[in-house]
Image 1 (tube, helix red, strand yellow):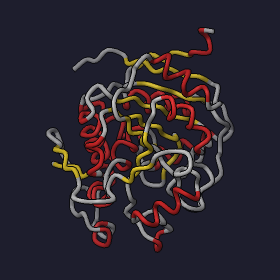
Image 2 (cartoon, rainbow, N blue to C red):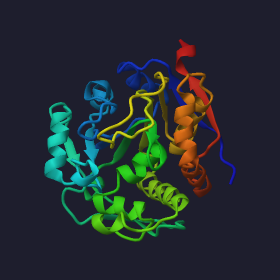
Image 3 (tube, one colour):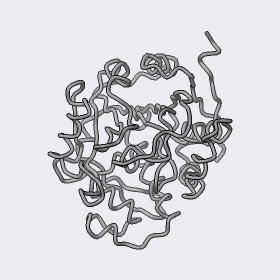
Length: 303
């Protein structure tokens, strides 16, 4: 299926007001009860997006910050594996004092989404409270990742929106929803990446045309915000992007990093390539809910 090029808007301005400027330029009005999916940061992590950075856009859409509990406990450096512990970290990081917070899987049962075109997964388990929302703003910190190679919009849709059990399901490529059991399963790494792409489609399709993606290419570490001990950024900040296409925005971010002349570029690219990270984007494009072909529109050049 041939898809038209998706529009991805970009600015080099990494100030908090640029998020609203990009949103207004996109011209997509998220209506009703708006969920804002972001990564609130593991305890000890220094690279996650701060509340003051995202506050203008969250206030602009009158959104609720949503998260799901993780699938790793204290033995793996985790402090967000249950709602009580998770909310303590949210408070420490300044989220609960600035926004309404909803831990989507704080109460079961999970919302089960079918994966009609899934090769690895046939169902996806997401936080039950996702059903309370009419629209979704996916606000991603674009960075590297120890397992996925990189983290962006597709990871936020998949692992990010999955319940704790759902995270186990994706990580184990559909073998287990149990935290103790899932990490013991032998998996094919490419199948894990494909499972992420499949899970991401279910959330994207759930909100139909009521979803917007923002990727912030700042604090460019090779490690995820889920790492309680993460490497410091290896590249200078690049900018911020917005789109209604999760595949296009992640591809545009990858292209911008790969084409960078920053001295830290090779370290970041090695993280992506060593984990075959682009396979997630390729799989998502083949599933057809986004396009790798995009038109990059620099809004700074229009002023």
